[in-house]
Image (cartoon, rainbow, N blue to C red):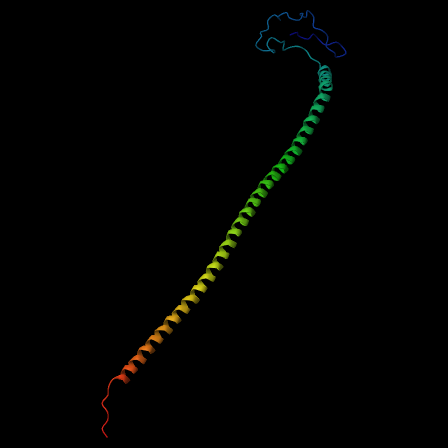
Length: 172
């Protein structure tokens, strides 16, 4: 590292006297810190510092501004991309919910068909029970009629036997 020499009258630094060539070690400086061994008491003019600062700013400021603009554009694009991604995620969730809804409708159709079958079976069973009740009633009525006829037959036979039984004749 070389140490700058005194500034020229117009404020621009010139090459330091007795400057070293590239690759030569600077006497008295250590490799640990670039600030070690610098001369602290070097006279520096304010105008020279100001011109150097302006030169440094004019050299790096356009690149920094372009970088800042590029970072702003990237950030803006990132925000747009995040919004788009959130919209796609919501669409994806919507598709999944639609699949779930379709599965629910399919399941509902299946259970509806089961209910229709159960209803048909219940109607068929109701008809069968109604027929069985009618048949049982007819059978009961037939039995009662037969029993009544038997009873009447017994009574007739009893009356007939009673009439056939010898009775003593009346004396007159």
